[in-house]
View (cartoon, rainbow, N blue to C red):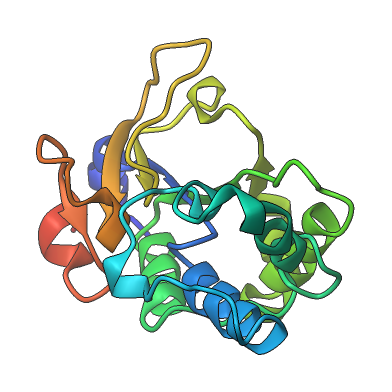
Length: 190
């Protein structure tokens, strides 16, 4: 844990789940291509919009939404390489780390499955460190690691938005950007 003399450097770190800890993109595309093999699709590396349904033709909108709202989708998302190790290391350094995630609008399966996913990947104790909200500006913290290009809400955030690098957020230039390969260099938490 962090020493007493370094307590002033202790941070509250909010880490998004989908696209940051869990590979939402891969899971979506794999299931979409399996369920709708004749449908048009966009490879992960070519995506330009944060919300998947905004990139596809309107007539595919319901098919797209059916993937993430299906039972089991969130519970079985693959863990992104290096994500667990990074989060556990931040915690070991003495920082207060929380998983700050937003439920989808069709939340029937999503909310419970996010808790199940965290319990499976990080252990049951980590379910006490889940913050679930549609408006992340309401949550107090020092850093928010998130792949969403921008957060608007009812408050000016207390946290610095550190962008988790993704093909669909490349137009954002003014924020620090990281991956789980370079997070230590970018955040400089030690």
